[in-house]
Each structure stands twice: as structure tokens, then as C-alpha cells.
Length: 157
Image: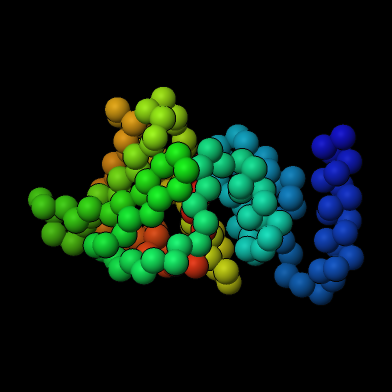
């Protein structure tokens, strides 16, 4: 049944997207999400992608109304998790990306940030320790810009 649905969606997309740049199929995106592989290139953020990511995600962060600025001041919350950026005291120009889970047993493999008009950004996540994941990132890393963007949607998959 899933194959029939994906086939129908692809046919409909082909009819409406004629002349547009090639896009990865819904089934290719879903397959990547379910198997932990990187998302295919050429993804155009739209409601269909948001629905796929929401279905696949353990935690989905909607757009945030509160302003945030990189590299400090970023603190995003959703049911099930909190994402913060904490400046590193030992490494100038770097910060910790800290993800805390409400359920310490929850484990996800990556953070995906989606902003209209840009391909999604992905960052692989290590296994949590005591319900928290910490990654040291450079302050110029595009993921920090995405986290600070109040229009970006975040997904923990």
C-alpha cells in the first residue's frame, strides 16, 4: 500500500512540477529518514517535506516566535526536548550544541533544520549521556544560524 501511495504522489508531483528542477522522490526522502542515511540533495522545503519530517521525528520543533541570536541566546523547546547553544569556555570561537531530552532513554541520530528557500541542514548526533547530547561546533557553523532563525523548523530524527 505504501508503494502505491508513493507512486501516486510521484505521479502527481510530475504533473505539477513539469519544467522545474529535478527533485528527489518522496520515497527517497522517506527511505533516508527511516534508514539513517543523509537526505538526498535537491530537496525543496514545502508542506509535504514538513509532514514527512514530522512523521519521522521523535521530536519536532515548530517555528519559534522568540528571537535568538547566534552564538548565544539560542534556547528552543518542544514537547520532548530542549536545544541550547552554550558558548565554550575553553575554545574561543566555538560553542556547545546541547540537546536535552525529557525522556533520558530517548535516542535520535540527527538534527535536521529546515528553512524555507534553502535545502535542509543535517547534523549527526552521538548517543546521549544521561539524556543529553553535546557537540562542540564552530560559531560560524550553518547549523547555529539555522537554530537562531525563528522561521526554521527543527526535527530530531
